[in-house]
Amino acid sequence: MTVAAAVEAFLRHVAIERGLSANTVAAYRRDLVVYAGWLEAEGLTEPGQVTALHVSAFVRHLATRSESPLTAASIARMLSTVRGLHRFLLEESLVDADVAHDVKPPKLATRLPKAISIEQVALLLAATDGEDVHQLRDKALLELLYATGARISEAVDLNVDDVLDLDVVRLTGKGDKQRLVPVGSFARAAVEAYLVRGRPLLSARGPATPALFLGLRGRRLGRQNAWLLIRAAAERAGLEGHVSPHTLRHSFATHLLAGGADVRVVQELLGHSSVATTQLYTLVTADTLRDMYTTAHPRAR
Image: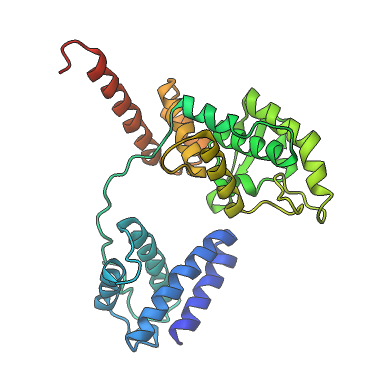
């Protein structure tokens, strides 16, 4: 079996037998195209020719290549995909050993999630005010992102039926796991206004679709377009720095914890499989408290 055939067999396995989402399978494919291309350049055309030394050399290549070297986080993600491929090959008895099992990813620095203040969120949301059809849609999208902490992929994948009586939204996260998240009054009002006065006009421009958020041609709004409209709103709001869809997710979690929400509840709302991921946000709130203490306490400095 060639490396290319092994990659295709693995992708079929994760898509059909493991039932991973199309987005996840596409991400695996992108990683493995890079890996297979590197192996080919090294003269390795069959999986049985690959050793642990080759996998380690690939990891070093990703960090040191002259064109677009990857960060430690991106290398760790790509190595995880490569490990999955080699583990699959061993399980299918296509090779004699899992050569990637003991290859270690580069150590990741602890990076705190970036959040903006409540006042900055208000400025961002106010930048979408208006009665034009795209303003109604953008307001509904941004309000919903901040109200639910949804990933941008979860938001653009929403169908109208996933908005349950406007009080609860059904989000489908990683691994097709569904969760119900309550929606606050501001987001409810924005979504209702969009459904009544905005979406029907957009829907008339394209083919029938159950999608909640539509582009200007009446089709499901894509992640890239959603990212662009959020960046445009940030520019209108005068917010400096990088504001992305994930900024609203981080702000949702940080503001909930700062307001006294239990970390386990926030974990469920975010759809994190591990509470350790959610606990990163407690470090953000601790930093904020420390800054306030240093500024305000007469004997702090």
